[in-house]
Length: 386
Image (cartoon, rainbow, N blue to C red; front, side, top):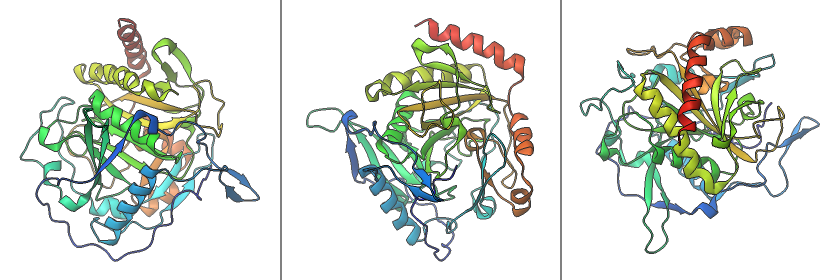
């Protein structure tokens, strides 16, 4: 279902010059926040009456939204992206899943060549492109938690993705100088969860691609972006697996089975990040590629298409690994596609795509039913140990 009135309209700009990789990230301003600043109550998708979108009373951009959107637009106007992102052609595929397909030809043509990946646990290689080489002006600000006088602070850089999927597409980068490989850490995930909760927009999402799951750069990062459309993954009912640990099964009526964690308590973000990281650590040790998606969501019991988003859903999809260099023009299945957002790189694919063909493509990248069931047993046992 569309929610097109929430994302600011993009202005067309002249194409940028070819980006030149520059020295490492600069010192930059902090967006300082506390747990009390997380936006929890009242966020929901707007209603539609007479074909017009109506936002709930009092809902507007948060300070985080205003800073991210303003600084991202500034970089767009300054020509720092590989291509000028314009309003994307979007259509919702007919069918119960409601896949949101978007045509983004320039991303397929202009993005940096992805790195060759051979293992989920591949070591960081300083000779490959990494985020110490981004231009200083690509960094928008630092998310800084716990900045009261005398309190220790933690920071993560928020930088533009120079090959954006959508409006506001940014990267969340733990200190690049640490040279961490693309293996999720609890601290990095906590920043991702808090970024979603700092936004008052129900369509601001955060995600992570492991190595072997179409991560393009082997240097720790998460993606964040605005998608102005509701996705089924936000409200699809889930089966309880270990509810005391917040673990549920996303399966019924959803084409990509996954493990779902849910919380509606802002003060539980650290615990939630730790629980999810235990699962992803286990997957890394088992050499199981995985994608992760963070979104505001309905309670695990649903109901489907509920408008209110009282909590946060984190979905982890274990999947078949894809090693080697990925094809920039192909319909690659990563965090967006598994969640129901389909960035398409050619007009032919965009026009011909159906829900049935999308499901078929997505499911080619999933584990077999037996593999998934075995992993489910192992993960439930893992979380019960604590």
